Figure 1 (cartoon, rainbow, N blue to C red):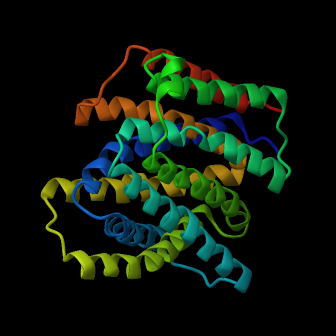
Figure 2: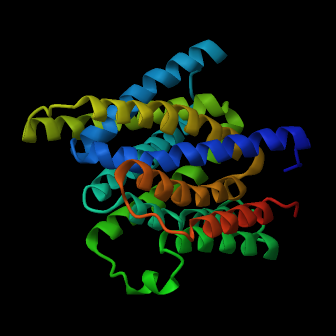
Amino acid sequence: MGSPPPQRLAGIYLKLTLTALFWGGTFPAGRVVAETLPPFTAAFGRYALASLGLVALLLWREGGLKSLTRPQQINVWLLGLTGILGYNAFFFWGLQTTSAGRAALIITTNPVLIAVGAALWWGERLTPLRILGMGLAVSGAALGIAHGQPTVLVRQAWQFHDLILLGCVVSWTLYTLLNRPLVAQLTPLATATWACLAGTLLLFPLMLAEVIGHGRPAIPLLTWACLAYLALLGTVVALYWYAAAIQVLGPARSAIFISLVPVIAVLLSALFLGESLNPGLFAAGLGVAVGIYLTNQPR
């Protein structure tokens, strides 16, 4: 994979940073939604709105959806199953019982798992510099959430909802690895749109079962606002930019930006939810930034 011009690289890195910002905001927004809606209903609401946005954007930018071959159809359903249904079911389920900051801590393992998967699946090289960069990025994010005290990570007992959130990590790793061959054949926008549509269809019967079992929930205005944020910025824009980055940088170099998500999530959770904020967050952000820089150095 040849290196793109510096100006294009700068644009991709900026969009990945903004993607991390938008995803960081999904934790406090998701926490608000999870307090009102059951997990599959919340996920369906998010992706039904996002599907409308992506289809509208695709009609404007590319004239509409193109037909898929049988292998592409299988890949699309797998993307919907892993990155949309799987990730969001675990995400909203876990956020019902854990803080947004602790949830973000668990997500810090994502870049490492994706990098290992890309090396095994797609043959991407794990150079010593990239391994060092990933280590710095993940460690910085984890220590920032742990208030700069490594012993906090050891003392905190893992509970059932933590294992639920690990499902997010596995689901997003599979989504990222499955994304690469499809964006090489389609456009990033088409890939994100097809994945979102497939995931929404998979979520529909699960949402219906929740509504039948628990009744149609009353949705406050704040919940609607958070759902709109999750759908438009946390999904439409973020999935599009993430798919475009994978097309150019590959899974591992794109996924390392996920290390920014927990640092941003803790900051936003402190601002909007009143969760604790620690002075080590700046050092954590610096460690993540250095790690991202090293991971994206030429081989």
